[in-house]
Length: 249
Image 1 (cartoon, rainbow, N blue to C red):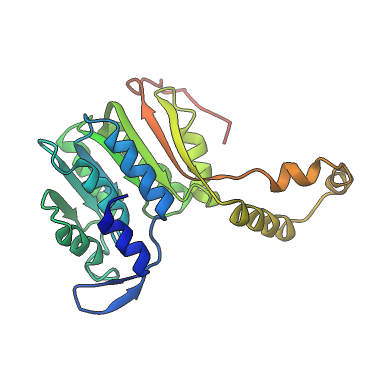
Image 2: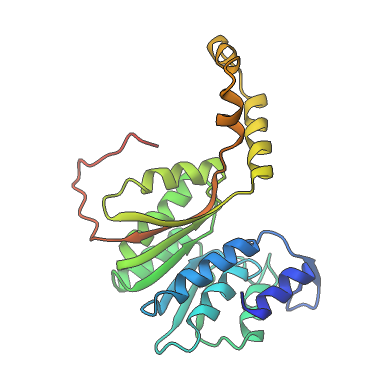
């Protein structure tokens, strides 16, 4: 991990353009930062990148510091709240790190992405989606990302352990043009607590209680971690016909 990024995680707080200090939250964690950074570092063809959602800019730094020094490197950020709710922290961090090849679009992604697509398909090498976390909005971001990615480009999506995001990602994972190429798994502690909360909040049919008497049930429920972040490689053009569908989500 880059030392500048490490220092931000270590401090646990960030400073906005207004001079106000904020606790570091709503950011990818250190494992996810490493994952993005090394995914890009391993492929020197990744130069032109796009990100939906910037916030405090830890993902932006991970992406841009990995492409820094590559000829033609550019990073597009879609974040309508960067200079309002986030006090410009994300772009300030990029400037502090000496990154000068980014462009900020302060428009909601449902408006920005179609406009970018209108300018040309298959123009990005990597797209990172971490925007509005409803199912439909995540799916919309992934739809446009699929059109905007070149073949052999990468789509990375954060917060897959949110049920809404996970359902959208489950659907997208069935696109014939994608192969999953990596993931960051949720810690086992978070995973079992999240699963337990879901179990306690859901009415339990009698047959499930019967299954719970099976000694293997505990391990099936609590020993399996779920992904926080996943990455797909676009291995072909998206050639789905009008009647393509998937029931597996």
